[in-house]
Image (cartoon, rainbow, N blue to C red; front, top):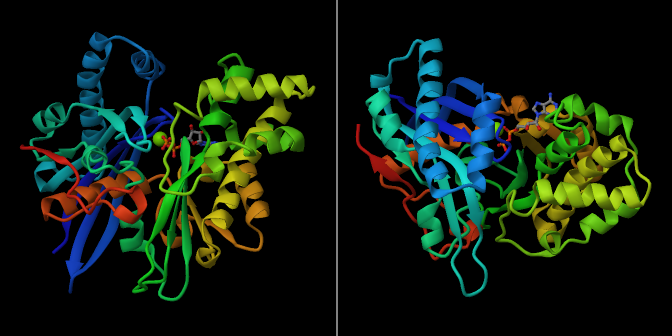
Length: 379
Ligand SMILES: Nc1ncnc2c1ncn2[C@@H]1O[C@H](COP(=O)(O)OP(=O)(O)O)[C@@H](O)[C@H]1O
Ligand SMILES: [Mg+2]
């Protein structure tokens, strides 16, 4: 019989809280998952502002935000349950990623650090079900990057019998899972390729004086021209040349980075939309270059895109050109809502926690070994 889990996720874009209701079942040791319902609850401008301020704010702000976020996550969960006509008591558990406040990957000789907020006790109190949270910390304590954590789920759900497949998520950051053929001895390869839409979002917000939060339907990028000189300079970043494991965040490819991109572009006489086009090309090209850099044997037969980036047709077009002849499709072609994958992954990670199984892939995160991920807040 299938068991129901709820996954809660808010990514680096600060666009809102994603909630996925997932049925997990296992037959003959094979895990299957079905997305029963999905909802994305956008943050109100005040909520987004509160998070942004806390990112550089005081301990008091962070402390309060933690409890606020717990309440917002619980409210989003209850909204989805109501619309799906499912009662909380029917859930085996909630898997809550929380909102990343800070993520600092390990460097040689020093462990990394990461903090996700969204107090699980508040969620457990409101829903009355077990909440599994804080999935990244144990992997980091074991020397890993604590990211990406979706690859094991990608492997369980989307491996092909006879070829490599890329699962490319484009959120604020962009991360890829290169899946070897099912049953092959080769390890899964996965890492953050670099910026997703965070730099595009930040550039658009700065250029529009806050009037636009993202490049809606990729219209600005489509109207602009990519400046190859600036693009080459941006692609010459150490991050893109580094071998995995590697992970990144807004700390590196965020608003300050976008300001620098705009400053460099202005010196070359670029117009607003040319800057957006070049930021968009940076995401597309850094993704395509990463596949070729990492392992020519693992070159995928197709690239399946998820995340908000799949909604930007100019980005998708640029990615298709950069990856040619590898076809680029979006996750809906495999029967999954492209926006739902990450939240669904945390629902499935909650199932792995509850059944005592590791959620990380050490080949991907660089951790010392497989670890059960998450902490339990009882109902
Ligand atoms: N219609 C659209 N056109 C262009 N970009 C879009 C559109 N809808 C959403 N997006 C982009 O998707 C982002 C959210 O993607 P998401 O996968 O939720 O990222 P994250 O995981 O970082 O929260 C938004 O910030 C925006 O940049
Ligand atoms: Mg999001």
